[in-house]
Amino acid sequence: MKDKLEDLRQMRAMAKMGGGPERVADQHARGKLTARERVDALLDRDSFQELGRLATHNISDFGMANKKFPGDGVITGFGKIDGRRVAVYAQDFTVLGGSFSEVQSHKVCKIMELAMASGVPVIGLLDSGGARIQEGVRSLAAYGELFVRNVMASGVVPQISVQMGPCAGGAVYSPALTDFIVMVRNTSFMFITGPDVIKAVTGEDVDLNTLGGADVHNTESGVAQFAAPDELSALRLVKELLSYLPQNNMEDPPRVTPYDDPARADESLDHLVPDDSSEPYDMRQVISSVFDRGSFLEIHAHWALNALVGLARLDGFPVGVVANQPMFLAGVLDIQSSDKIARFVRFCDAFNLPLLTFVDCPGYLPGIEQEYGGIIRHGAKIIYSYCEATVPKICIVVRKAIGGAYIALSSKQMRTDLAYAWPTAEIAVMGPDGAVNVLYRQELAKAADPKAERERLVQAYRDKFHNPYTAADMGQIDEVIEPRSTRLRLVMALEILRSKVGSNPAKKHGLMPV
Ligand code: HXC
Image (cartoon, rainbow, N blue to C red):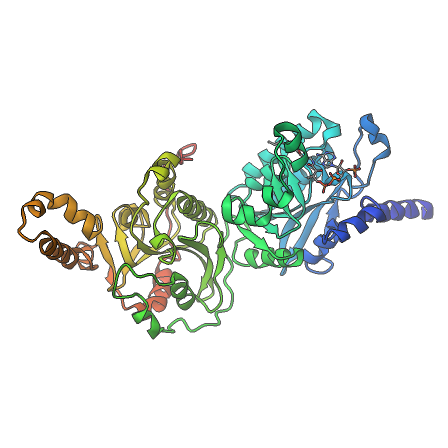
């Protein structure tokens, strides 16, 4: 027995060494932690229960018989973050470049199934060159097994992917099926295939960062939602993100002990919106003033800047926040912001996060580029996602809610529960200049003083439509509120809606425009 225990201890010790001291030193030299160090940094102390630590592959071709490492390049198991259970897997780049194998797949799929059955979030720490080339079709099939688990878990338990090295192939497609992707600046990269293969196939010369660095995917492609300056910050971000989320789709998000006065009124909001409706202001000021102090966790903060989305707390309760940002492109809806908003709305709906939408938007962006890019298809995603969402929905028209923007952004007709407006709201089918051109072209052509006549008509249009009162008369706006009282009104509104039960007709699934 003593010898057998010693054998076990030795095998477990070997598993801790990953690909060996040289590879570990190389990993550290690249500014990266090892998989095991990452798991330790992520989880509450002594909470990790590892599974499959001794699993190895059974491949002998391509010199693989001599390349067996206990665990086969991935650490899998369960642990706790702030006392709440999570499933974790961490790929070990020191073992065959973290490449994904049949054994890795069995291990990861196993914890995903247990996580789904028990309603526990799944966190992947990825550092992998993709499908293990030596395993051929086995490693491709391995990804198929993982993808199906990613999709089955989608909307059941939160899935978060942290990219912590050069990730290629399936190591980017699996994360793309999860809810959030966090990247680490300078040490993590995402691409379907790496620079060497690109050079061989297309002749293009490109470095890792230019091809798929954190900035590329956080500002250009929108593939990633977060960029962290280093690995420990990335892991802290995961913990922060989880603090807003329920463990699964059957639970409510966790309330924290309230620390901010629900009746706190901010007088500065009364003067925030400029008199000139073409002048910008920072919608972040509205958000930081209305929600619990310091609670706004922005998502996709560097992409599609004309829209803001993120998680926040109101009287301790987590909520999803959507807003236009007049500081960029006047807060217009374009292809990218449509994708950003629609994705976030669906996430909130899946995980029982009430949706609060702050509107200041001149409409969908007109133009050839947008039309050719499919603004109709992309813009429709916003409409689809709000119409489909059954969580409590509240909208606040802060200033412009023109045309499509009024109706698409959480309008009452699209099943929004409560609609508020500030006195600065402007609700119309189109802006005054466009409307006067369409309605009075002939009159203007005949006018003795076309400029004066145009100004008169524009003013008449503004007087009629650039206020919230017609919409309030018709019940499309429930209440025109003083900006300073927004926080308290929303706290009270959410209290009403907390027990809301919403549903959709039975169907296999809808056909969200993609
Ligand atoms: C087997 C791999 C591997 C892989 C890397 N390695 N990727 N082994 N299968 N997919 C091994 C290398 O041979 C090397 O082993 C070690 O990992 C470290 O790799 P390096 O190349 O030295 O590291 P680096 O220079 O940092 O480059 C990392 C990389 C590059 C950019 C990830 O290795 C690369 O381009 N790999 C291939 C990426 C790719 O095209 N994957 C797509 C797979 S197809 P030694 O022993 O020599 O040090 C796929 C399909 C999924 O995933 C289906 C999707 C729908």
